[in-house]
Amino acid sequence: MLFPILTQLQKMSSVVKIIEPSGILDKVNVDPLRKKIINEVENGADIVLIDLKNVTFMDSSGLAGLVLALKTVRAGGSQMYICCLNNPVKTLFDITNMNRVFQIYTSRKEFDQFLFSTQ
Amino acid sequence: MEVVKKEFWQFPSDLNVLDRVLSSFEGLNQPFIPQMAWLQCQLALAEAFTNAVRHAHHHLPSDTKIDIEITIYNEALEIRVWDCGEPFDLEARINNLVEDVNAELEGGRGLPILSQVADELTYRRTSDNRNCLLLVKHYQPEMKS
Image 1 (cartoon, rainbow over the protein chains, first blue to last red):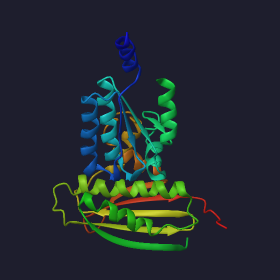
Image 2 (spheres, rainbow over the protein chains, first blue to last red; image 1 turned 120 degrees about the vertical axis):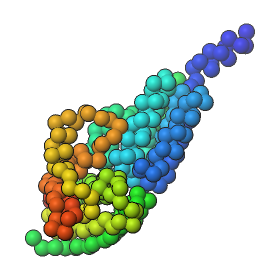
Image 3 (cartoon, each protein chain N blue to C red; image 1 turned 45 degrees about the vertical axis):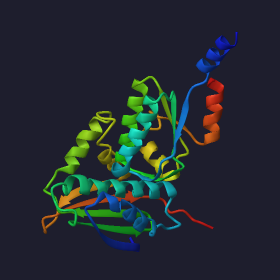
Image 4 (cartoon, each protein chain N blue to C red; image 1 turned 180 degrees about the horizontal axis):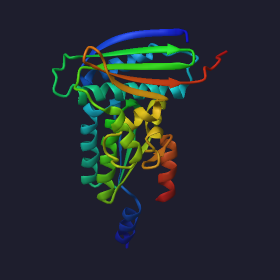
């Protein structure tokens, strides 16, 4: 009777992938990130967390790329979250109201707590 | 108004120099400028610069210069960006955008950012056939102990 239990466990736990881009996120380097995100979902990730702790700056083109990725991820039935925005990046999300479109966590710890509470 | 700091830079029309634009700007930061106003101006400068590269200089060689001038007063910051593109009614474009804020989530957020940040925003033809974007941001200077 081990197998049904295992199946149950697998159902309960989601595949979580974490991506940590770095530097400036703009028109030049948001496309590789977007492809990476979509790749993770295609490879079976239920949840993709974009940890932005090493992103120093993001402009509207970088944000546009993330919005596109979010749409693709959600269309595929998966979830995408972001965390660890520094002040310049937070300024961009606030001013464009994208803080209402994305689910944002201030830290990895806060994200882990959210994840734990849903499993 | 007394000028606290004023600098002028020239950059090529290349998105890859955005980090240099940002670090030049960072070098001008003053302790009395509120952080939120400063970060919003930094973002607006990035949008104004990339806008010039991607739109105004779209058909021009990448060594075409983009001139930037930053003027810091006690209670205001001015950003000027000159491009060599065709005349363009950016102010009308922004006014149309304001009426239709949710038009497109994916793109075109550069101009709304400029108008959100700015207390005054103009884009005018100059006598030497260039365009000058002027963004003025007012703030209350902070006393730092």
